[in-house]
Amino acid sequence: MAAAKEQFIATGRRKTSVARVILRPGKGNFTVNGLPIEKFFPDQKLPVVKSPLEIVSALGKYDVFANLTGGGVTGQAEAMRHGIARALTKIDSELRAPLKAAGFLTRDPRMVERKKYGRKKARRRFQFSKR
Image (cartoon, rainbow, N blue to C red; front, side, top):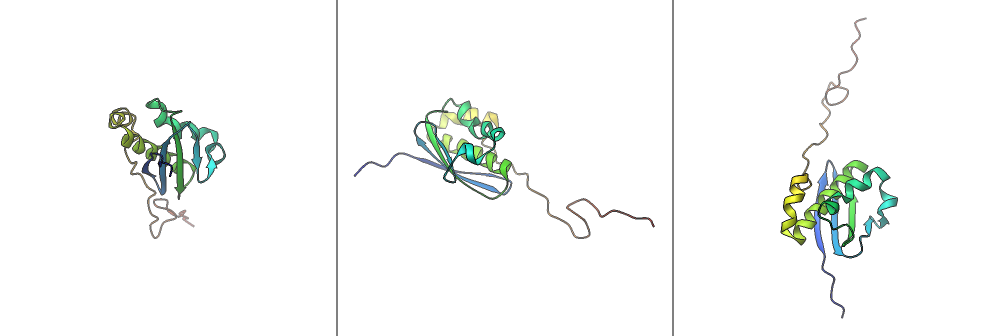
């Protein structure tokens, strides 16, 4: 029976998006929800996702598999970045310092404010008409 490949699993979150990320030693392939990353994310979001690997000089060393749910494109890209950074700290605890300095290990707490009654949105009021 073949030995199981070593893998590192982490979860990243941003807004309402959740990314379950698996890092395995490999050639640098990215797979998101079963698709190559180029088909899943627009071009301007690729640097956001790959930035934790670039900071620690591990861009071609690991294959990344991610399962993304919820939210939109930006939230999912930043959730995946958070998950990759967390998985890298599981691989080597010395990578924590540069990732922390770049702000990739901090869970961004900003969420959408709920809509209030008597208002059009969270803070926007209905248009006032004097006559």
